Length: 160
Image: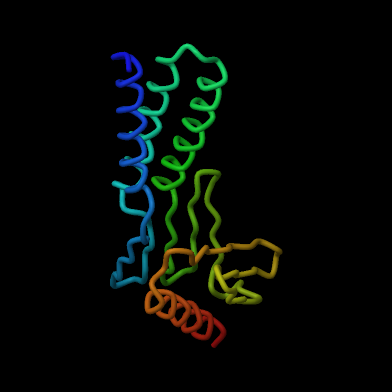
């Protein structure tokens, strides 16, 4: 095995090892005003570091097909890292707000028309048609229950 091949293999192994840290449970922060849910910054950073390692491995080879596959993996890992860093849900006194890589949506509790708990998500629909779908993948069962109870309590309080 050549030194170049060994370096590429080491980069791919490093990328795989750091990518593992991009996945995990979200962080729940209970505050006086309500609840904030986000991803720990290390998850986004791990995906970005993994992305850089895959890019370096892809660009150090001679095969165009492997380089293209590596760059596609790089783009996916970079998007994962950016989305992990951007995602945040706030269930606070004035409403529910979700921030993603594509933007932010806020629904006031008094505007909530329907709450639909699903297997992997909780969907809130406003009277004007706006929706927030909070993915519950990775939530511990007790955290999901606490979020559902917080939403139900806030909607009830706003309806009074």
